[in-house]
Length: 505
Image 1 (cartoon, rainbow, N blue to C red):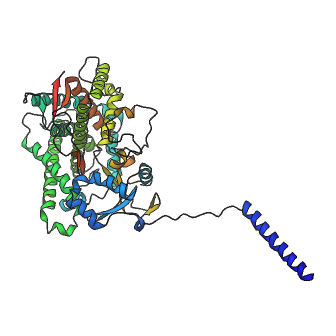
Image 2 (image 1 turned 90 degrees about the vertical axis):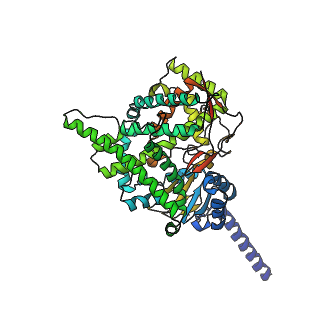
Image 3 (image 1 turned 180 degrees about the vertical axis):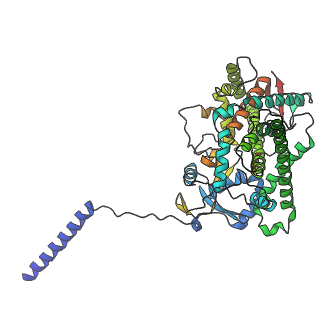
């Protein structure tokens, strides 16, 4: 009997203990689960051998934008790959791109651009806005921002830009009259010259002859130098430095291109400065609306002016050329959009041919067309950041400081999960209030302090040109149904000539 009572008491105690544990578990706060971030070693990606095979055996350097799509499909929104001696982490998701950009700090570094910096150190040139870092970069950015980012300051360039657009219309008219079918061959080449003439007028308030029937040899050489430099940029960055002494040609051509570009800019700067000095000597009032003049007023060194103007010259050309070329190509492929845009332009201008900055601002379809073109064909398909002062978190990974991070804008802007019919030209998507997209899904001009400082001037130049071109001409493809794809040449460009028929309205 006593044994039975002992067993009963034990059973009761066990039951009471289990009951108390059960009750405690109901009201106990759950333990905090610490989620540990994965390291750089955990980031997936192709082997170095397979990636180099893609780059050099499958035309990879010209299809880096396509490798973004392939990388995201195979490895997810974050992966790593070695571009020659450079390890880079690719990020192809708008939310993660935002996460990177919001951690970039006071003096963000866009990318290493190692070969550009090596050239400047080798030749003793000053860094400009594209290559400077830290406080030096901040000082330059602040100076230029006063004249390139304020809307009223930008509007003041509309007069000189409209003069350049007028010469473009004359050149297109001349070119179309050389062909019985009114075909203008290789419109990208024409817009490249237009872009260079436009940025020169803003920088120097003078013309360099890009839109003349016969382009000056010096100007043609400058254009060829820009093209060669961008091609050689990818090769020289992909090659370890010791190979530059073994395979000398890429580095030699790269340096020769930069040499001519610096000499070209210096020649025009010196000429404008000499003009100013002569006016001062004659007691005349000196004023101007060109950027070189403003830089000179800041009392910075001539060496710095040479470096900044040279970089601004090449930065302003491809943006204009690429955006205008793809815009006219897509408008020729979509006559219904072209007709609607022509009607919008005529409605605002009311019969006049030369628009003002305030008038093109009243053309929502115009802005939507350019936005859609830059979504499909971002001038810079992959931007980059280097966070130099601390490790950062990107999704589930901790990325060490000083790691090159490539922001895959081409992949995000062509993502079907973000944009319906992502590969189709549909400018109306930007006009529908009910359609919303992640704000970092398409950022062709970048974001924040390192965004394109010439964005407002470039957009104004494109709007003025499109309005004038469509007022004069109807556009058609040379061969209906023909297709032109993009290719990477550091920047995104057409892989073959875009030839269009310009019919007089």
